[in-house]
Figure 1 (cartoon, rainbow, N blue to C red):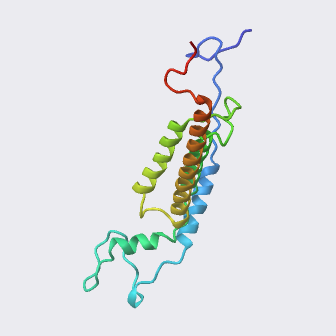
Figure 2 (cartoon, one colour):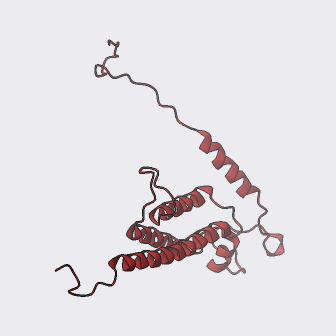
Length: 176
């Protein structure tokens, strides 16, 4: 098979232009429009609210960090963050044997891997505390709690299975 190559191309290799999916840009634009369209909380006396981090005008107290966090609770959820949490949940469920592994086609239990994934969700929850929208915070908290519950239940079941397989053998009860 002969192909004509451009100068600089290796023989037998055809270079094609990449096709880049640009649809994500439209989603981001829509999310920004929604966030900007949300009514801003009017400041006392009808004055414009100061930009976050900007010093308060003379005679007014600067809003404390707790108020700023409370205002962010009403912010729209970031779908990328929720999808990321969802992928970690799916990974943990696969490690707990609740879902088929798409590569092997079987349900496999990896308690150590599941523990690490659940720990990762808990670290993420702790490190993002106060910086998430209400939906994101609830999704993350519920996911970590539910997975911990599954982990404990499956660990108990496996321990009982292992105990049942060991049988009534004691020390020295092996074959003679």
